[in-house]
Image (cartoon, rainbow, N blue to C red; front, side, top):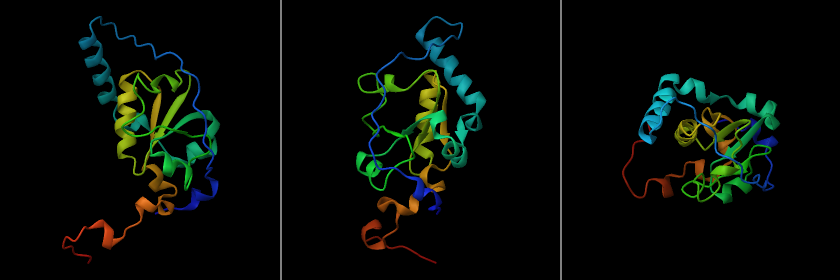
Length: 167
C-alpha cells in the first residue's frame, strides 16, 4: 500500500460549485430508451481504459480536474483528500435531487474512492449521462490508503469471529 501522496492531502472542506446544467447528449435518437441504450453501448464499447486515469496525472495538475472524492465526510476530512477535491457521499450524492448538477460540463471530472471499484461504477454512470469523467485507477489504494483507518486490517474486528487462514 502506498502512502507517498499522504503528504499532499488537504483537510479543508471545499465548497461545491453552484448548480449548473446537465450535459447535452446528442445520439441521434429520440426516445429515452433509445438514447439510454445508445449511451450505454458507447460507454461499454469504449471500455474502462477510456475512463481511467492514474494518480500522478491527477496530483501533478489537480486544478485541471473537478475531483470528486466519493467517501463519507469523516474520511474526507480525516485523514484528508486530494487537493481541491469535493466530497460526494456514497448513497446520498450525485442525484438530481442532491448535487449532480454541481459537476461541471466543461471540464473532466475525476472520481475516486478507496479501491477504484466504486469510482469505476460511478464514472460509468456519469459517462452514460454525458459527463467527461475518469475514475482514479486503484482509488486511494494507489496513493495513501495505508493512512485510512477503514483500510487497515484488524483480525479481531474484521473477521467477526469466523475461522480464517492467514498463511
